[in-house]
Amino acid sequence: MSYSIDFRRKVISIRKNEGLSIRETAKQFRIGPASVSRWINQIESKASTTRQRKIDKSELIKDVEQYPDAYKKERAERFGVCQKAIWQALKKLGLTYKKNSTSSESRRKRPAGISTKKTTV
Image (tube, rainbow, N blue to C red; front, side):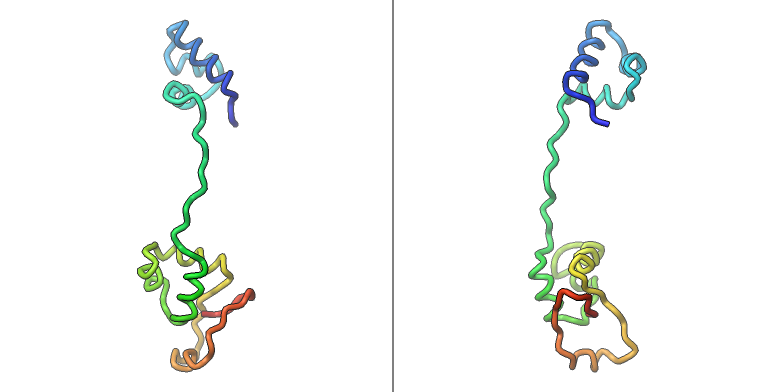
């Protein structure tokens, strides 16, 4: 639950004017002491920003086409990210790594194509 800036200022001013502790102020207004403590340092909430992604989706698709049998660990090293990031990016693209009973040699003979449908890599 987000409290208004006016309410936050009121809480802080009453704390200063009456000389209350953080716990006493929190109890009086029925809010958490962590909120009061945070408002003392910064009344306005921080603006959220969008995260910068490290993995370029088009580069990942090219990598999958170039190295269809590569492991997540190998891709992660090439992109400079962790294996989980590779897994999440491949999942978002609808690509999966499925082990077949056939040898990797026979899989290499198949053309590696990327489509919007789920494909095996």
